[in-house]
Amino acid sequence: MLLIKNVTIADPKSMTEVLGDILLKDGKIVEISGPNESRNGECAEVIDGTGLVAGPGLMDVHVHFRDPGLTYKEDIYTGARAAAAGGFTTVVMMANTKPAIDSVETLTYVLEKGRETGIHVESCATVTVGMKGQQMVDMEALKAAGAIGFTDDGVPIVEEKLAREAMAETARLQVPISFHEEHPMFISNNGVNCGKASMYFGIGGSDRQAEICMVERDVQLALETGASMNVQHISSSEAVDLVRGGKAQGGAIWAEATPHHIALTENAVIAHGTLAKMNPPLRTESDRLAIIQGLVDGTIDLIATDHAPHSVEEKAKDITQAPSGIIGLETSLALCITHLVEPGYMNHAKLMEKMSYNPAKLYHLEESRGHISVGADADLVLYDPKEVWTVGEKFESKAVNTPFVGETLTGKVRYTICGGRVVYQA
Image (tube, rainbow, N blue to C red; front, top):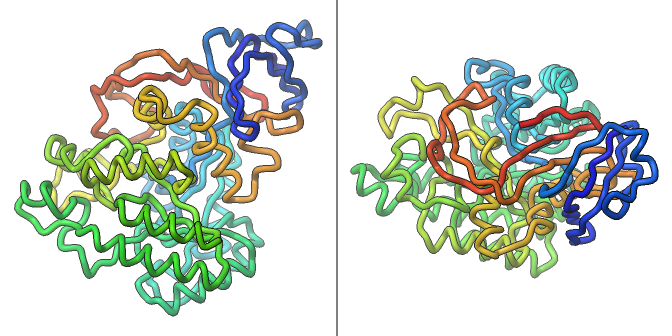
């Protein structure tokens, strides 16, 4: 047994923050009581939670662990360690590995390797074979083999007929489908906003219309098919408005925002170059504020890192040649506390809704994950909500590609507990 004493319990299911004790046994939460009132405390290993917040273990619905095929960037073991260091007990791998996760064989490899880590490693499968946007995978077989959802993340599905068929099939199977919403027609050089940043580098950049037109189409398709559709890493105010409108019409439409789109604008690309290059790109201050408003009013359901490790050599290339993406698992919670909780946009329970409960709901895991309740899984993050720290140059991830090195943030993970076991301690 493990007893966490005198901790502030931030539960997103009840939307409460109360001081209390949490008792864990056999991988489950077995008792929640007032502070220092646990009846079984004398039998348990004890963590003193004074000054800490306990949230349900964080769940990231969007990570790239590069395994199989690109393990010089990251592998499932190092990715899981980075996740645990960031407070995450569940992650959902994207399928753009080499080979892509479009077969039962590759999916089985990923899931079996994930079970060897200390956290829950889930995985999506691709929507199309080889992520080529031509032929749909056997979704039924992949779901039966353990795929938790489907996405061609990294590549937009441009063909409308195929997108419609994929949404209809995922609706039939009752699994979510997630879309990378960037139409290549509106992109000259990806990863950099078409505007102030692209002018600075003297390149074409990625126009906001690339996202807008795809989100507009896919919101409509979701309404027509009844699919549970997730707009990945939303970046523009217009896309936020389109998701808001689709939800108002009763669609099962979800959207995720990354910590970097919450915290940064295209100015960061000018300051940090390729370390702040990502798809979709960082945009304007009005877009950043629209994303925060979308999180506050419920238009945007999820916060997901889009953890995208690359090698130092790759990121050292020219702005037009370096790959897009940054790592995010080890800074995510602190960035969200710094930019959402500290300014008063939301409290800790609301943040846990975006980072744990809603992600669990999207993937139909909310019965046992994403909340702090008796009978729920003993997956928790304990963090100091007021500790100020500076992001260093060393990470549990293999990669270091982030513009946040040297940034001072508020909020520090002290313990990550998965299945009742401490899998990370600062």
